[in-house]
Image 1 (cartoon, rainbow, N blue to C red):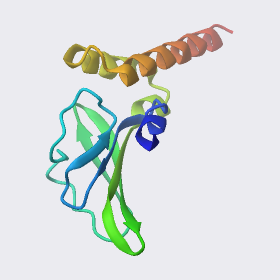
Image 2: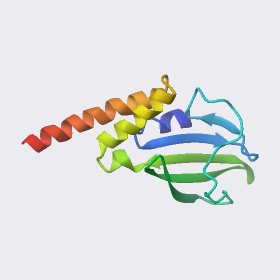
Image 3: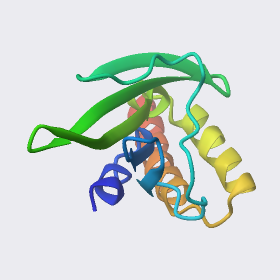
Image 4: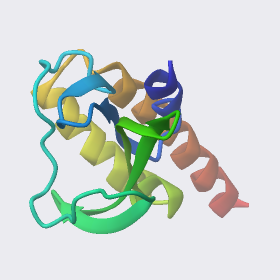
Length: 132
């Protein structure tokens, strides 16, 4: 549920939960197979506290949040969220291009479709505001 809710935000590029061994337990891409997480190798590994890093992927800047998950003081895994700045910076045309590239690779990716719809509405509103 947490991963599904996170993907409702158009700025969220990805969301997944992994166990302490790095095996993905839940993720935003429902069509992906289970297995080890695949994060950029340049990112520092998560330790005992929140870790925020940035990197560039496919020409876009991504802010990566890694949060340790602990139950009764025992580490049980981690939550990873990646945010793209294109939509937040009111660059919906660029965000649409990125999400369409996702659809080319995975035509059934529901989050990308939803994000395109939201960005197209924002783009239309911005264009109407400029005309005034």
